[in-house]
Structures are given as C-alpha cells and as structure tokens.
Length: 152
View (cartoon, rainbow, N blue to C red):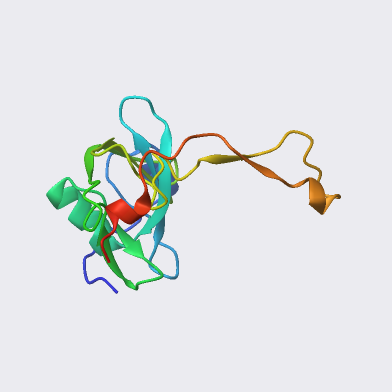
C-alpha cells in the first residue's frame, strides 16, 4: 500500500485532546471516511482511505479514497465529473474515523445517480425476528441516470 506516513500515535491524552493529526489506520491500512455536504451536513457517502489517499486529499483539496474493489486510489468524480471539493477535514475523538465536508460538485455523490448514497431507509415496523418485514423504502429521488454519468 502507501509509503506515506502520518505522525505516530502517541498517548491517549494527545490522541484525544491534542492538536496533532495521528490517524489510526486498521491492520489493512485503511481508515473509515464519512463524507458530508459542507452546507447541509447531509451524509453523502462512506468510503475508506489509506494514508496515500488521505495525503492526496489534503494536497489536492479533492476527495480521494481507496477503492477496495479496484484495489487503487480513486478520486471522486474522475469518471462522472461529480468531484468533491474538500472544505473541512475532521477526525473523531480517538482518530480512527475521518469525516470530510465537501462541496458536492454536480450534486451527485452516488454511482446510482442519487445525491447521497443513503437514499433508502428501513420501513417502519421492521422486525429482525421477521425477515419478510425488513423492507427498504426509497427516501430520495434519483438525480440523474447513471448511464449518463459513466461512459465506460
């Protein structure tokens, strides 16, 4: 994976209350990243970053992730044109999750043509003891036909 190295993790007090970014990447070299709209705070997507993609994001100001399915860096919008311009980078209390707030250029974050990847919700009355009740309802409308976004 990446040869880029962020500052080493030190002690709990510095990690949780200090002022140095010390991200905790998992054994697989990845850290979860929640991406939200910088104005509305709506969650747009979830993906993983490795040290290289996080560094690339910081250098370029464009959201860049690690694609586990393609096993490569992936700058959001490289195929669709719907780039994510980073407005803020946050980390949680123990620095094992990254949140980026972005300007969602083009208005589409999901490869299925929705503004957010979270466009379905579990129906009321869902009961884990009754699998047939675990139904999803659409909570948003598709913004664009994905065939028009992806030419490949």
